[in-house]
Length: 117
Image (cartoon, rainbow, N blue to C red):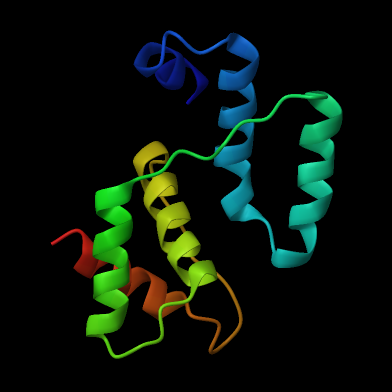
């Protein structure tokens, strides 16, 4: 992923490319409680470096519309989970969505499918 990021954003410094690759590839895998620990590790590895997440304005809009179309409340955490699944599927050969019963797995998958059509 770092190589693809560097090719697509040649103007970015290598430390930002590496930080983004590490963050974007690993963040979707963590349970909620582990996110602050990982963010602390990234901050320790790249002190003083600030790197905003990549945004997908058109895709975000489609996700929000899909959630509303399914008569669900648009929740920023759920929108983020759909975007994370999208990013994971763009960079992985296979993906497994796991979590507790009623945790929103089917909703995230169905929202992703609807947002892409």
